[in-house]
Length: 182
Figure 1 (cartoon, rainbow, N blue to C red):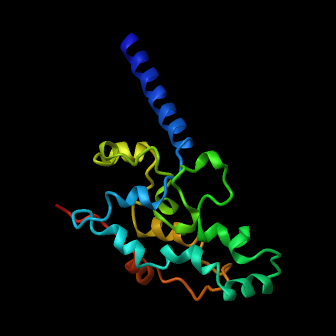
Figure 2 (tube, helix red, strand yellow; figure 1 turned 90 degrees about the horizontal axis):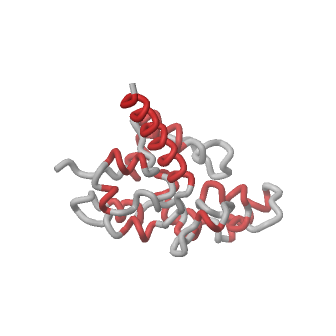
């Protein structure tokens, strides 16, 4: 009976530690992820992102066209300063400064942690080599295409002034970045 109680206490402590650890994760930025995710072995994930519109998401808000859209929608700030635009074009624009690592730059747009969660808890090679440890430390993974689409449409929807419909298979094909099977 003592062993069972001790196991239960250890399990509860482990869960609490993981939840608390995830809550304290900071956004480290694409440059921290790039160190390991730019190789053939990793599927050139960095290059896929760099060639995507996600990498240009913040820059797109700095254009005259974006400002005219913001103005037409009744926003009083430029697109690159409006929370209504920033919420889908960057992460960390409205959060507490203590959630951002000193090297994080929101101008890098929709980057790795937008979809995969703040990375300070799972960014090390020792953690990333173990999928279960990575997830326990805060890495967000998706079980299927339906779950991916559910997340994507939080931004890719008719609330966006540039929305032209969202075809998950076509769009996911442009940003999909699996690690090759070895």
